[in-house]
Amino acid sequence: MSVQQENIKSSEEIYKKISKFVPDVEWKIHQPLIEKINKLKKEKNAIILAHNYQTPEIYHGVADIAADSLALAVEASKTKADKIIMCGVHFMAETAKLMSPNKKVFLPDMKAGCSLSTSITGEDVRMLKQKYPGVPVVSYVNTSADVKAETDVCCTSANAVKVVESLNVDKVIFLPDQYLADYVSKNTKVKIISWKGTCIVHERFSAKEIEDIKKQNPGIKVIAHPECPPDVIKASDFTGSTSGMINYVKDKQPKKVMLVTECSMSDNVEADNPNVSFIKPCNLCPYMKKIDLKKILDCLENETNEILLDDKTIEAARKSVIRMTEIGR
Ligand code: 13P
Ligand code: SF4
Image 1 (tube, rainbow, N blue to C red):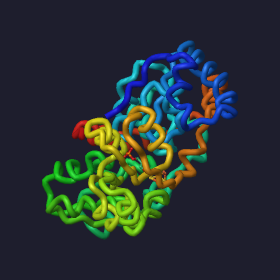
Image 2 (cartoon, rainbow, N blue to C red; image 1 turned 90 degrees about the vertical axis):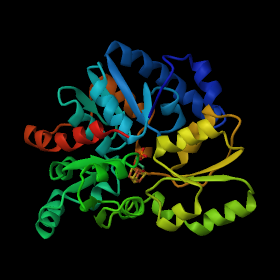
Image 3 (cartoon, helix red, strand yellow; image 1 turned 180 degrees about the vertical axis):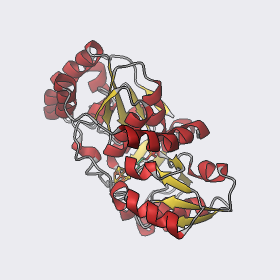
Image 4 (cartoon, rainbow, N blue to C red; image 1 turned 120 degrees about the vertical axis):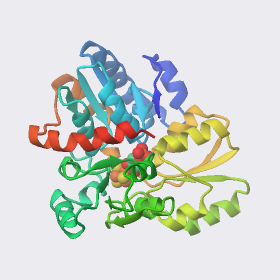
């Protein structure tokens, strides 16, 4: 699921929405950049896609679409824009390039990586395929194009179980997140062969932290991302992808909620749900936070940081992503 941001809001409207999270002194720096970006993206027929973990001035200020990683991949394939600016991390921009190889895709900072993506290489996958001949490979979209090129089908946290079951086999190699693999194995009869990757943001939450918050806030709903460790998921009331979490809050309007995930998401969701009170554990993704308005403007003005992939990699990696989007959520 993606959130289509209202088209070109005035600066006043944007600030009204995010003033609780962006101090006035910072807004004075953001405002002229937001105005320039929103003007230039139209002139250059560019679309700004943003992940739900981007900061409020990006999510509410300049994004055309804000979404989870599955919807970002789908939107990248559907857009009529000539250029895509991906406000997220490297694997998201690469995935957009795989979905739309003829478009120019930019990532405002090439150092915006991901601990899951760097936990495994194409060579590692080839080694696993030799060890488990004939067993299909399902890779989390949080992987490099080289890994995707060795993959049968990708998945995201929004459709991991559905993707695994779509293969109609009794065993799959599931890469690289050991906690997402554990979550999937608890929700399917298919045997899961996992890897040892983790997300540095979600692995830091603990069940004790959640139990303490629940004691201090009776009635609070705790919702967790499936990249969290198993005991954290067990202690939570709901588990879902970032968009699954957003929809939970939007639809159920709990009095008080805690999103067990990256910091900025609570701010972004709170801005859209003013009647819900948020308890905010703050684990920041240092990679997502590499993206800022100045770098986005630089992409638009100077076409810096274009994602380039050779044709062979595109051809091999594209199939696994397309297959994922065809399965849907
Ligand atoms: P989603 O697919 O749920 O948006 O998650 C992406 C991600 O990187 C979470 O850490
Ligand atoms: Fe990667 Fe975790 Fe950051 Fe998502 S939050 S980009 S999985 S390091």
